[in-house]
Structure formats: C-alpha cells, structure tokens
Image (cartoon, rainbow, N blue to C red; front, top):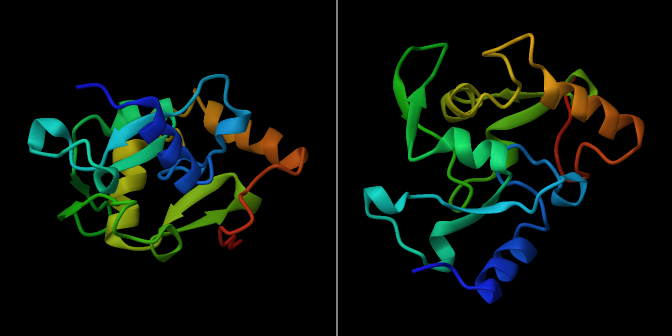
Amino acid sequence: MPINEELKQAIRERAKYICKYCHSPERLSANRFTVDHVIPKSLGGSDTFDNLALACRRCNERRYNFVAGIDPETQEIVPIFNPRKQVWAEHFVWQAQGIVIKGTTPIGRATCLRLDLNDTRYPENDSIRETRRFWIQTGLHPPPDDPCQD
C-alpha cells in the first residue's frame, strides 16, 4: 500500500527537510525527496512512521535494500547508519569545509562507502562534491547542526 501524503509530510517535517543520510537539503533539490524504509519492506520492514526516513533520491537509490556494508578500515560487515535509531553526528563529520562527509565509526565508514556519499566510486563524476561546493558558496551548506571538522 502506498504511503499517504499526510504521513510523507510528517516525515519531511520530522527530518527538517534534510536527507537523513547525506544531509542534503530538500529545498535545494530539483526533486522532492523520497521516503525510505529504514528496514526495507523486502526484509520485513513496515510502513510505520518509526521505520520511515526522508532520503534524497541519490541516497535512496544507492541504499536500495541494504542494511549492512563493509567498514573499509576493518573489512568487517557492519550495519549501515539507521537514521531512526542513531544520531548522525555520532557517526559522521564534514571535512573540506563541508564538501566531504567522513565516517568516524565503522557504521559511518560503511555507510559512506555503501551509499557513496562523496562520489568516490567514480571520481570523474564528483557531482555531489561540486554541488556541495556551490551550496557552501551561497551559505546554504552544511546544515547548521552538523559538526564540521577540517
């Protein structure tokens, strides 16, 4: 059953219109953000408010139905970031004045890799980093609550 518009709006408001994975602002996107099932329906997740998070299309498509990834430091399989149960700032920081998201924990590192939060899989396509540079120049990024470490 599709998620109704009232529930989608409640999810947007709870997220303050920010992608819960990459922290991109919805207002700067050409498309409305999607509602992501934190535990995918294909793995038994539900359409309940507590299992839904706001995600930009880029993060939603790259997350697909994955709930785990590989920590590039330890090579261990770990859960990816769960925006409904974890705090973003405990797993990620902004680097390069807000252009790069750095995972600071195994979960953060695995999520950065799984969702390719910095377009590192295809270095010739650094569109998200270029977009963040532009947002920074206009004073719209990073979100005010996010820690920035350089």
